[in-house]
Length: 433
Image 1 (cartoon, one colour):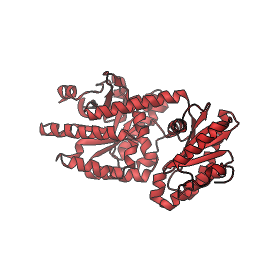
Image 2 (image 1 turned 120 degrees about the vertical axis):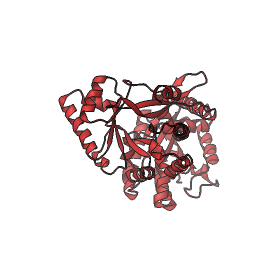
Image 3 (image 1 turned 45 degrees about the vertical axis):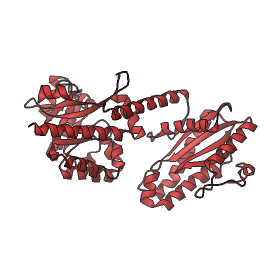
Image 4 (image 1 turned 90 degrees about the vertical axis):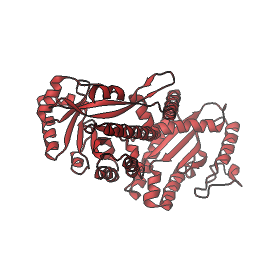
């Protein structure tokens, strides 16, 4: 570090061998010393590099270290505003910055810095998308420990993750409340898994022509200690953002596999049950092998299980996803692309994806049926998909009239409140088996 970074305080302290930054304890000591003596305004900035593990994996640890040190050089070494910085772990760095600017200006400055850094370095790592996430905490009064300030900056940093149009977030009380809710949901998940209390529901899939139930989608619900159900619209984004969706999905997969074995041994051999796979699964090296290993023990046909993957999963790291989905399909599982039409579907991808079924999103269907042009587009899309031997399921069907229209267009099966809502396994067995 250069003279502007409190060189006097930094003498004779231990440093990280990779980055030459002070170790965390030394950083805290120096920062506390500075905050106790001066009255200027300070901010804590916490930053990390997205996909850093993939950079190490694809380019080697030495190249990862090079990128990390480039960030540190620009972030703090050559930044006269930086008082002191440290690497907490891996690619996660934290700095104490002195500023005389408004909060908005600080956020804007960090945002521009991140964007500039990405633009300058992405070309050196073409197969791994680089993104910088930063969180900022303004120290308004020195009435707490430095680690508390770091925690708040990290809370803001985590809030920026998953938002590729936002690379910097400032801490606020709203964030604190959101983080408290995240902690509550994660606690409920852990308790539900430990006590085997996750509620697994089934929503029927109906063949339009025969009007018989031919399958079902497995859906999950969490319940808190008071018996209140947490909406999937709330807990799914939280679990995906924290990576805990893996724990939920694995629980549901294991639960459904056991149910399918029981059904098969009882003579119910024609109901296909689908299970959702989050995009995070595909960053797990052995996801396909793990699922197959668990299913092989059941000794029942894999064609009875379908894995649903949302279309957005295929739009990033396409080759990797295709490889892992392909392994599941080669084993004999069915694979569907879910919510097709809800985002920016690429028809080019359809030709190379290892899938059997396309599930058309309710929003896409409702919008398409509003106009003649929309109906023509939807009819043409279904015809094209069927011409390449894909089955079609239309989601969110609520009226007989809509069902008749999609059937006329060539849709095979429907799912929605017209036939049934998601119901308990016991009720599904009683009504449909």
